[in-house]
Length: 135
Image (cartoon, rainbow, N blue to C red; front, side, top):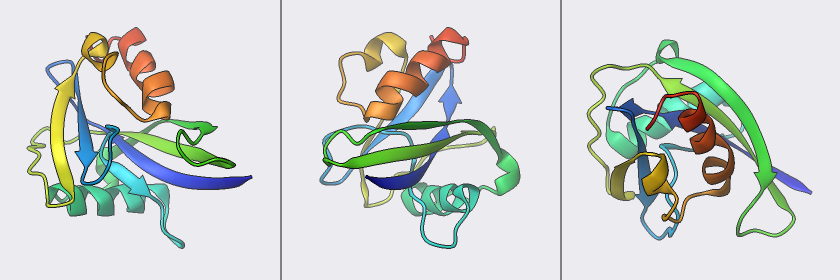
């Protein structure tokens, strides 16, 4: 079975989680994406946030929340290994690039009715809610 490694950033404001929907995608996810060959998960997330939001963060702004592995929700015989980090940057002001179609801030209840990537829907968002990070 093929495993795709990705890095994702948790950005919380007023107890709501930032999600984005990329151009040509139906599901929401947090900022992040695939880890390129030779990159660490932290390097990938720094690169992705720069590409998606024109914001510079450093690896020092990242704190590992956890790693989650699930079957890919649209590609058969593929698993996703998601490295999830809190992004500790107080002045984070997202300005989506052309590859981001939409951003939203969600709490737990509003996330229940949205098409969200499997790892975030089943693992990350429930954990953030249970631990009191989001309402």
